Image (cartoon, rainbow, N blue to C red):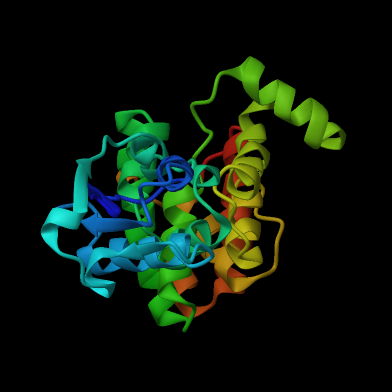
Length: 271
């Protein structure tokens, strides 16, 4: 008699659908336990995927990793599973996982490349990666958390290519006080919405850096780094030597200088 079922897959990462499937098997009285076996290959490391499975099944005493218990092979029915919502999660829809897993995803900044490629057109993605490299460089110089700089940099233009009508709806319901601003500025607010409600990000410093990266009106050092790196991204194709030198010396002075040049540019003056 089969006493256990084993769900076999990449779990890249484990999702709520996987847990719901396990619950259905447990409702069938012939199964005493549901095992999860994580395949070696995946986008995230094997270690990360195993840790996320452990977090997801922790509340359920009848769900375990296959390596945690010993059963005879003839007592286990192995069932390969499909990806289900895994691809959506890798594209940033962390709300399709449990709280402990989406916290792990954000804390270990997993799937950033997949998120950028899903949300940004190719040209925008190239800018994102270029400015993130600069942001990390400035973070190291000024003793700011390099991982936070990478996360904020990679996510800052998440909604740059969002359809204007969709962006308008988010602005209307969540940021009505800013809807009169130019639609070119909206993406810093809509990105904040996505980070909070879809990616379930809790890090206030990263959120603030994304929320203020267009106008540069936040005084935190991480926010200054993202504002500066976004505006003087080497990929934009103009000489940044002077501005970069100032930013390397002082983030405060660098942000002031970048903002001054930004305002001159908007007025059509030479910079």
